[in-house]
Image (cartoon, rainbow, N blue to C red):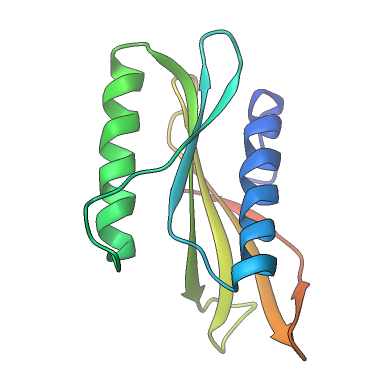
Amino acid sequence: MNSIPHELNGLLHYSQSLAKLLLNEQGEFHPFGAYLNKNKVITQRMFNDGDDYPLSIGLINIIKNDFDQQQILDLIGASAITYEAKITNLNYPVSVAVIVIRLNASFLNSAILCYLPYKVIDNEIEYMESWVEED
């Protein structure tokens, strides 16, 4: 998979911009969600599990389950879950930090994972070339 369906570009841009802002201001962020409602309005969705230091995987699962249910009920058109991770692959044999945005919509066969790798050099964030994969 080499591209994002044009219907999801606004949701991707919104999520990526917010993640970059939070990284620049705070150096990190908790997983967050955003969705496209039936009127094509992007709405941010933060989740609180009651823990001041939540496990990211727990928040990701809460957000994913909530969005999956809303999508089944046809309440939302598309969703994005944004979180930080460290990965390795053929291009990055040494672990690299990435912003991950999981895009999902009823018209997709499977969710799309968008990766934006970055590194911090002298307190400045440098972003590298992004890529997408099917979930």
